[in-house]
Length: 83
Length: 83
Length: 139
Length: 139
Image 1: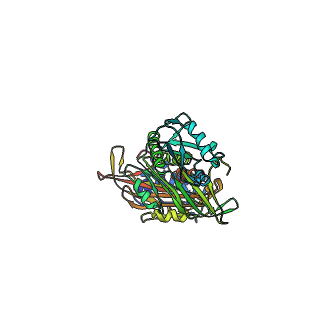
Image 2: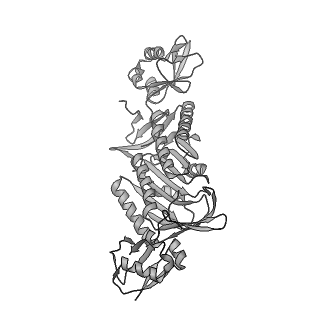
Image 3: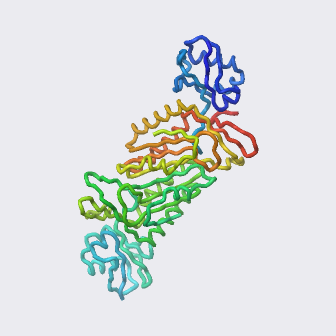
């Protein structure tokens, strides 16, 4: 199936899209999906080690399981606020 | 001569005036004037140990000399600001 | 910048007075009056002030703050006269390049203001009695 | 109270939203953009946001702050979209019975916001180049 992953900021810039589509079989864990992200979109490989994943609006670890209903995003280092 | 001393808050309340007039010979130091204040206005005696004196808009010690031109005030514990 | 005023403190103006493109952070402190202190209700307040000395001492505070911290602008406004609960009696705004500075400096200013600035508060309790507030002194 | 907005932050409204007769202190923090960073000039900024997650994480921050401190009201507003230097990107207001609480809690909120809230800033430099800001990451 196709998993849509939300991209922001430099991840969006490098991939050239706000929604990366990754072919995979679910459920899978975040660690497995990371590898598929790099295979699908090589420009993300250099920044991915600096990024966190979010699953259902919460930070996820490599062990977090992604189901078909999950909303998934790549979270580059944040820079909200000011000074 | 007559030295006018400015009073505020509870000092003003106890003396019933914003300007206490004390007969004295100047120059004198703050410690000497304190005694004359108590003699002139006994209701101030109980609060005076808690008050500071100001001479020319600066906190003074008992040794500070008061000249004829000086502006003198009794400064009860302050309570500006909030919470 | 130091201001004593008998009018409502214009917080928008206070904020604008410290904003500057060199500043990344602004901290505004407002001191307001609670309507209830312990189990007593405040009807209103009166602030008395030895104005010439208060301005001198506040200017010294601002100068000392500028020596201690890298701030862009400081504005200290104290209200005098008659206030109702909920109204601000004091506003302190600090702008600085970095946020930690603005927080530290703002807190130091209000802490110091309460030590040495000749301003006094009279509580007019809702029960009709009045009381000058003098920390550390029994009335 | 959490708000994300694409309009100018209404600081007066933010202040009023936390005022309460149970509060003796209000601390407002405003984060603004300096026009100069090092030797580079900022022309404008764009803030991107993962909104559903940002709101969830900000609500968690507010809840944690209320666990840690005796506060009356909290309002966190973050601006999104296009900003000019000098405009506020974030406003955090805290009211509390005592002033130390409002300062501590306000500083903790902005420090924490910068760690874990999925909001990103793009610098549009005056020289025409653009750069997403990602602390700790080489571009």
